[in-house]
Length: 125
Image (cartoon, rainbow, N blue to C red; front, side, top):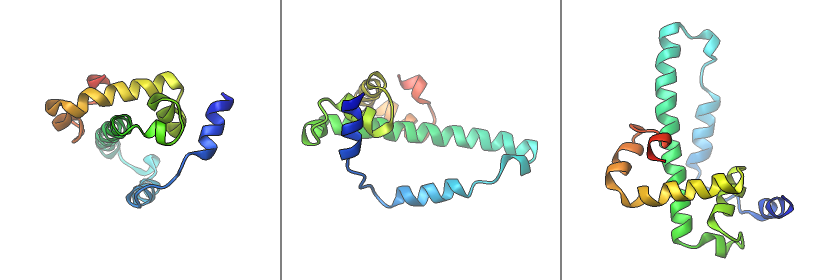
């Protein structure tokens, strides 16, 4: 645990600005209490598709980090540990995300479907 905390303190936080824009858009989502039943149902479906797209992107990031040996560059030990520290997950979850991203980065069928949010991370894993 102490190792993860030390890694987290040293982990770079640089990222593309588009993530801040997306965060602002998420902050602007309407309060579900003010939506009608149809809007809530439709919003759940859209939110789930967006979540699946983010899951696919996160798996792509993990696979690319593994491919480029980012854990070695950042002295994180393993890519699974790097992913765990960066995402606030446990090391097993981090390693699982790396494993999920690796086959998908080479499987065009998975990429075409998971990227646009047509299949979920549960289907890919």
